[in-house]
Image (cartoon, rainbow, N blue to C red):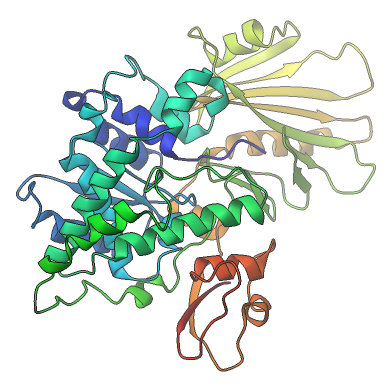
Length: 464
């Protein structure tokens, strides 16, 4: 239904546009935490922090405060902010195959901060005021298309080839000194480029390279030379990994079923907007691109409740004023101002000027940067007292999504198997819950895009 949340290179660069003194990373972290966007798995949060601190300890910024987090976001991306906040999406982690590769992602991001690329690329001054942008990327109400073409092109260009190479060179050095393979930098590029080709050729989605390693191809000689420079820094005694990567991979949440709206039984979940609404028991509930619709059971039984998401008005308005000024409704009576789950709300009855409905109702709830508009109606043969009870309960059920809700809504998990002789991605796809292009998806998340097959004895990721 509603536009899904996507933290992409766009959000990364816009946030880097803030002055370092403004603490963009800390500000973003607080917003993400408040809106439940951090991945609710302490083991993964600790794991990424352990790798990050290990790399930081041998970098020029050793001793400085850096913060490493996993975002509960299905997109294949990562981002670094000038004040040392580094975020890796779980969507990217699902495509990796070793701790070395994960360290390569983190090392590259540390390289951007160490190299002061935001300032050197004049990105800090590109945007004078990005107030409200963080909230916008969380709700999905801000689209790339809303920007002018010139700005959009600047954002898509990233830091540019020189700074990306420099970040890779830094990353390779950090990996080597920390006891990882510097060639993992190149391995990650293969992962990301294959994902982009998969998106373009199989999913028929725009092939937009990610901010991470976005400007050079797999066989870039300068990249290979930059990474090779670090080979001599690898210590004689290779350090043990922080954790068993494949053990950590088992059970990782995959994708985001609820990203654009998902109905399970009578409950509507929206992962992007972090909102939950519960419709009455036994009602038929469906969602379209523009609304959620709940209908009373019985076929011709004429009672329904709809839900839509709208943008907040430009000027400051109460929910009651939103109904009269923005919606321009002068037919609402017996209105009531109240709070629902801590959010400002207004609920009222609509005068019936035409038709044979017994009752029409309307409600508005403000949550974060969105307005949730409920409408209800019961027809001439409906049970009015029952409808009024269920109407009030449905509107009052709106609340913020919790980590437990996400566990229910997003129940696809990565499962790790040991490939047996004769296993193919076609046969493994029969065990997978992926609905669209399961064989091709398994191939790409295992690093075998476009035509590879699993080898007996190797660890293989499937999704169930």
